[in-house]
Image 1 (cartoon, rainbow, N blue to C red):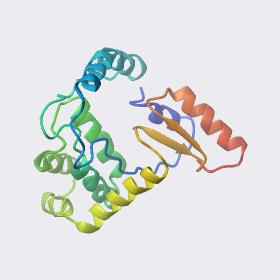
Image 2 (image 1 turned 90 degrees about the vertical axis):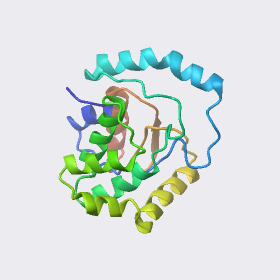
Image 3 (image 1 turned 180 degrees about the horizontal axis):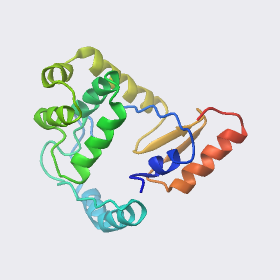
Image 4 (image 1 turned 180 degrees about the vertical axis):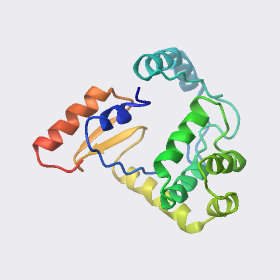
Length: 188
């Protein structure tokens, strides 16, 4: 069983994926308003139900307290390094699993390093990469690009450099857009 709608789409379509960094809570963001936290918590059982029904994945609700809530900059820097090692896809999957299933703190460098090691990356090289200004610049460039495109949520899929699909959509929705791109001769 696929772990996501994107994975399900890839079972039937040769989709080229380019992961880009996007922080929901970039440094300097104001605290989440209480009413927004309440909405997140109220909708969480439905999110868990959908993940279980569609993908057989049991999601756990991350804590919505503390100063590292939603902090993902280092995780994105680590993703840039992992991609250079040919492990970008595996790193993203491991990161999602660590956060959504194992309730690990992906804002913590030691957690990210452990994930990298689990994937076969050398700890010292990965730790150094977390402080690499060039990798950070790549993350910031991705975020600037997203800002220019008026993207403000995740996940966001752009098909054929034309169609934006935002939010956790079904594989069927993604498949319909992929088929449209194929009909138009666009690259997936």
